[in-house]
Image 1 (cartoon, rainbow, N blue to C red):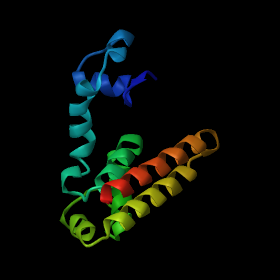
Image 2 (cartoon, rainbow, N blue to C red):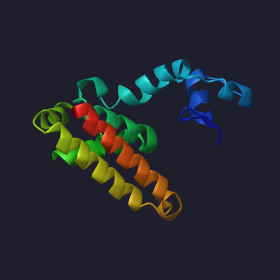
Image 3 (cartoon, rainbow, N blue to C red):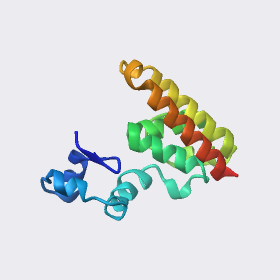
Image 4 (cartoon, rainbow, N blue to C red):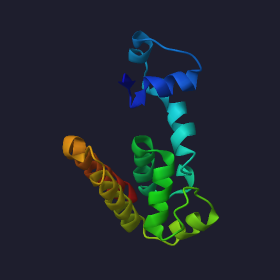
Length: 143
């Protein structure tokens, strides 16, 4: 469906609490969607508490595949119980992990998930490119 700045019409309508038309969707700007991204994705993956670079890899994953999947992949990457709820045990495991290795593991697990989807043959080239780009940015952020 209609999308602008990665926000679908359905998600935007849920956020604003009323139907929107194409003109309203086209008029969206970064400042409009930033609060939605922060509340619905960044805060839910505890972005402020994650190491630099790992936060970005998890955030992008959450936006594209859902917060629950992002949490589970983060948990698998650190050896925590993949229950989809980022709590103290997950955060302790994150704190004891190397950020660069963790970002790589998140991206590897994300790509493996995408490769298992029935639509990978259609969209896989773009998905793979995106994951590779996210990993590069995450590495740059880690330093």
